[in-house]
Image 1 (cartoon, rainbow, N blue to C red):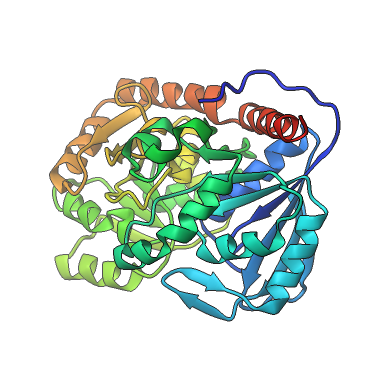
Image 2 (image 1 turned 180 degrees about the vertical axis):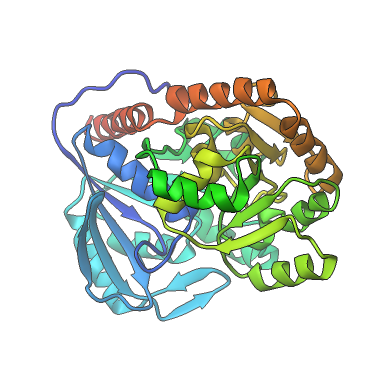
Length: 385
């Protein structure tokens, strides 16, 4: 393992970030993780360009606060893999020629294919290993040669937590290349009094908050199970593929304490974070590799509830230090954890302070930006020897 301590700022480094989708067309944890990383590294003289596909890629180039966004047409999406055409190759090739380091956010098989066509002069490759391929097991077998090419070509593989490396069969074969650098989250602007009063009048201050895209691996079925066992309100902020089914199931069960409020902007989200009793994050599958929502809760000094699934969720949330950790797929255990926090304000305060301290020490932009700059310097130094 590489030790990321200290950083020398000798020159600006240009990094090409490659990911399958990006803001403003899509919203998700992967996009937010890249945005936050780019913002964090700006202070350390890193200039980021983000290449992504989009269904509607006009304009092809946008200047965002975190860097320049270059987009090409997404012609097809197969098993969550966006696929582009000749324009994607040409645009990505041009950006690769003008960068110092290519950083690919895995898994995206089309990016692995592009790599063989855009890389010249042994240009350094950094792979951010977001997640194993969990759901498409058959396709993963076919994909494995291309994956092995990507990881074999990488100078470094960045994992967001040691937990994930321990539980990933794929990463066991690349231990000598792995660095641990978590995702980060910038501090937020305090919410307005008007927004706080708006949500306080609706839900009070003792509700439990879930934030995220409503996907199959988020464990929300088990959160509905928990809701049948407690009286406290549960507010579900977000929408997604499972939204309709979950709303129907909650209505079928007559759950008056579960409130689906859809997707909201950051101002409203921060107001709800400031009011809630705790963040509840019931993801039950390893597709949940990290959990940006847990960082949002930690930053807001709220106690966290999550499941032990061998990923970054329990790298962020340390049981009895920053929150409570329960077994996955267990509505009763979720309900017990929520009841414990609902009835013990001293425990909530202690865990909330612990969560904020852990965010400051491990997941703030200053810590993560410095670690990435040091990583880039080390890679470039090795390549230029």
